[in-house]
Image (cartoon, rainbow, N blue to C red; front, side, top):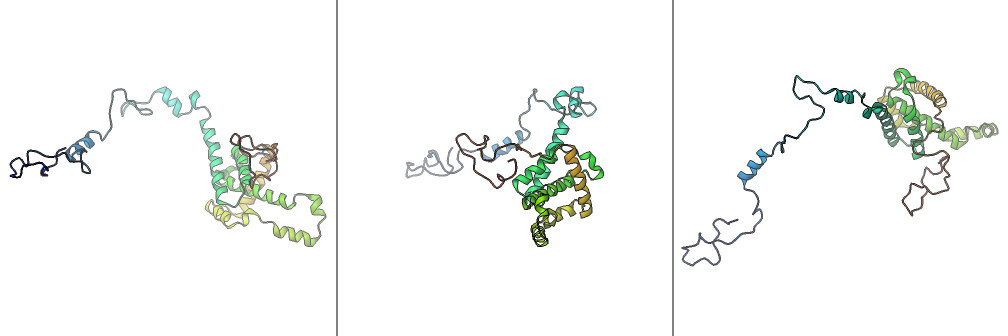
Length: 252
């Protein structure tokens, strides 16, 4: 690209050929498009390249037209390729919301996976007007966390509890802390329009359904029969499994 108005170092002293011979200039920006060419390129390429082979999927050919029957079956999930799509998405949504609540609350990975394992296979229609995923997911987390904390303290062992004196019993119950005592959990309850009475009612229904739907040992991504002392086969080849805070969970 020529440099305008810059005389060559070899130009004659009299200046006769000063603007006829010029050196090649390599300054910043040289070799790029001029402003006029750049604007022209922008306008011509604004809508990308259009070809006769381009297709529009999911739209009619004209405002008065209609989509094909095959495409309509896809939209209505009546096509074999879409069979069960809504059920799969509902299952994923239950897992996603439960995981989000568990991340916001003080729960362990094992308690999170237990709650998710219950939620993904739980039939919510039995909860009637309170069957919203957000509400049932909160109650499932409370059920799982409270159950785990009672188990760790031995409150579910009737023979152990029967052998305690009143002072030991009071000390044990002072150490127990329900998830509903957590301030963050109460904020989530308020956001979903739940109170203590509704949560307790939903939890009673949940306990019944966990037994009826055979979800007592449900844990997402874990086997209740796995030996915790053995390394996980899902680890990278050649690496050894390292214990985590959830490795002490039952059946982990």
